Length: 565
Image 1 (cartoon, rainbow, N blue to C red):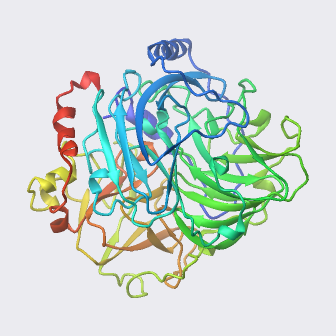
Image 2 (image 1 turned 120 degrees about the vertical axis):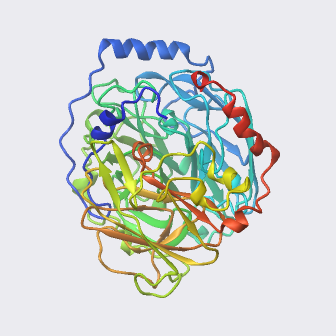
Image 3 (image 1 turned 135 degrees about the vertical axis):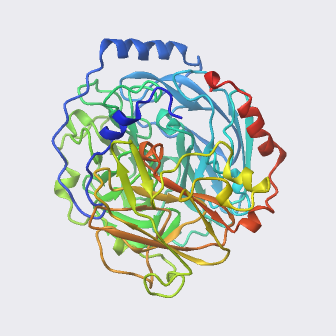
């Protein structure tokens, strides 16, 4: 339930056109800045006064993301923050905004105690956190998808997310997985470092300073959405500027000439995808969504919500300041006065902004094309190398009903059940037929090859970034291409559906039992039905040993009056 949200209005607005994820495009003209009515401004100021008195992190040029280990207590609270020159209440983690980078080494376990101290009624006060890209092998109860694998954590309560990562390493992130809570700030990077990284000799620096998060930022909380509910600015590591706003501090990434940097780029937005590039520098892609890929040199890339790329940046230019740009797929696409921008600053360069008019879209000569990506370790797609010859073949067309303000996937519009799917299975449900409306789920057998095709439709909200929990997958047919690749296709966990001309196809093996969410990672689209649950290996799910604290989540949550959530 999205309190205070007029779904037909927001739904109609978020049918924004966006280009194919593998092609260049010309950004639309600068939108007229949205002017807040005085009543809305008063409402926002009142909400700010109701926010927690916790102090937000000091945000200054050159700000490095705060960080913590994989064994921490994460206190989820709220504070008034100023990310782009405009103050508003936001969600904090351990009193920090933006949320801290969680760091671990390959093979280390995670033990993250999430304590819910949310009290601001202008935002959702329950919470649930998903660890994006981590498979949760044998611990689906720690996946964090509200009403799929758990009940939300009620205000004033806590839950320990305790899980292993089974040899995974790379660039991941974490975020709220309840309603639109991510948009209020509960999102941050999660990096698993590999001491035996096969690319270790290609870079000299890989630390907090080389992580770049891109996000959209609203000037209102998600329970006080005005119309149109357009985002106001793009943030790099929690800093940005909005059109017509003050020259607030920009994020600065500092490099030393002659060194090579492993940059980790993450789109943690609620909605837009971005064209990203760095003035005067190429980028050598080496990782895609937590999987090492063969080196691939580009000068720009499109990154959809939830996607991640590691690239090598060679600091081989003259000592100076250079623009980093992230042009969103809609809204304000200009870079006037440093909007949609951050700074790459060489040690020894003056403490000032670049003076060039760097246009990442117009200047690109080598944009990233998904079909050019190939895993470092050649990995054929599983199953018979012919379309439609997997053990289970699903065709999940995306459809939109503007009048009803709903999306559907495979003919069904997803509505969260009142009891989490995992809990229902553990409670003795014989099949998913008893849990959810037909079409909102698929029961998948163990150790089988699954092929999912998502045909492009007449949908102005495309491209959709489709994310699968519990797995990554082989992209055997990418957006922007009609060619099939069964030999060594890209492996990732978020794929673009492209446009109406596309027919994206993925494959994976059901080797990880659990009820896994497949959904659009545009939060507004997920909230109106663009999702499905894949119940994988139900007999093994029933053998899951969920901790007592997990079993207590639903009774505690159900006992809280809706007015306090």
